[in-house]
Amino acid sequence: MSLPNLITIARILLVPLTVWLILSNAYGFAFLSFVVAGVSDGVDGYIARRYDLRTELGSYLDPVADKALLVSVYITLGFLSVFPAWLVILVVSRDLLIVGAFILSWLMDRPVKVRPSMVSKINTTGQIVLVVLVLGAAELGISLEPWLFAGMGIVAALTAASGTLYLLEWVRHMANGRSGILPG
Image 1: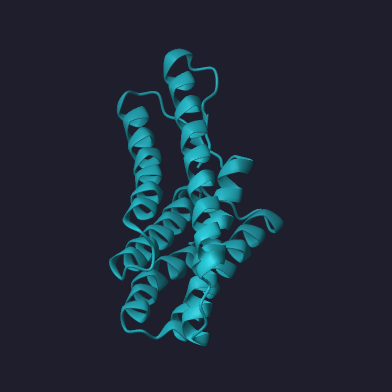
Image 2: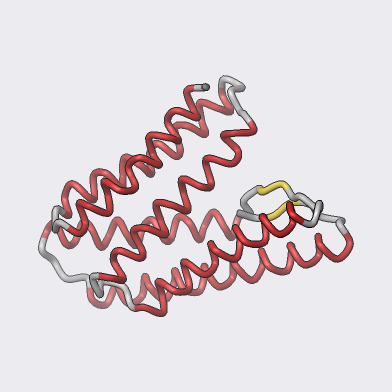
């Protein structure tokens, strides 16, 4: 087991802790847990690239950890009515689409490599920034009303764009097999 994979597994273990902290109104600790998870995502990737410790397991675990954290936090904040249902449905549906397409491709013996596109990376960053702002504001007891609305609109647009591009790439791959790379 490589160090980057251990860091990724630790990030997966932070998911239930972060959700519990949010549900317990411990926003400062939830903020800290979420930020640690986010930083660990960059650290494990850096270590894997820098010291050539990339593994096949890590290539699967890393996006699973990212999706588990973001989907869980978005569902939790939706449950608490911090995020509207439409935003939670959009974020979760996009990730379900990606996972479902990956599994279907594998079952149809047309496996694809998952490599995040620039739009997907920007989308993930936007989703993370929105959560950080919400948790930070909740801990500080400040209102972000106009910024929150704008942030949700930006995340919705990025999520829709990323999902659409992903779907088009997947259809292209399944139709003629030219691409073979799915933007995660």
